[in-house]
Image (tube, rainbow, N blue to C red; front, side, top):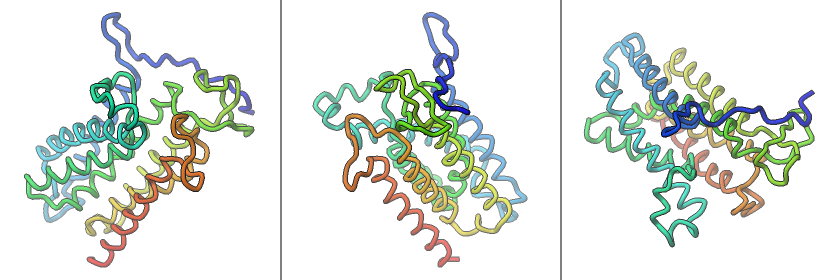
Length: 270
């Protein structure tokens, strides 16, 4: 039914004022932050925390600012160090050429983790409790970001003979149907994780076990990303590495272990 389906003609520029452009990718970041902020406020409602929510409205607003800095700085540095150190390190000024693209989720996760730990230290908050709440909103940004990747026609999948094959105009060689792996990631890493985490938060007492929900998010993302990488085209400048795994898969292995550790630790402490 979908075989050889052409890539939809979507302009990656959302608004073009001539002297200034707003791209869908930027709108994805903006939308993810805005919805995440609103949803985090909802998770702080008294009905979920009879003895007082871990975060006030002011805390939420400040935490989002800290998180944006962590995501952008960590995502960029992660891409530089994990994927193309041989390109950027000899010419460090290129690290600041963010308009040329290049962000890594795993780096963004490390960046937001550092930002969150600093925030909790200065505000004297329970870091694992805050991490649990942030984990519940993180899939929103992931979902929007992957949809933006699809609109840009980047990070496409491997060649496919399935009914979901799609011809991406920027894929080389041209004309071969490929998996729309960005949409697979948007669905599993975004929508599915969002629904799962918020059911666990709202319908169970797991929010009272600091670290559990954060572990579910980190481990769940690692598992979904690891398997979806089999449908995603490896980075041309890296290819497949140890045991025919991509860099994304290798970075997911410690995520799965960390997530499992957090879940077990939260259960034991409870």
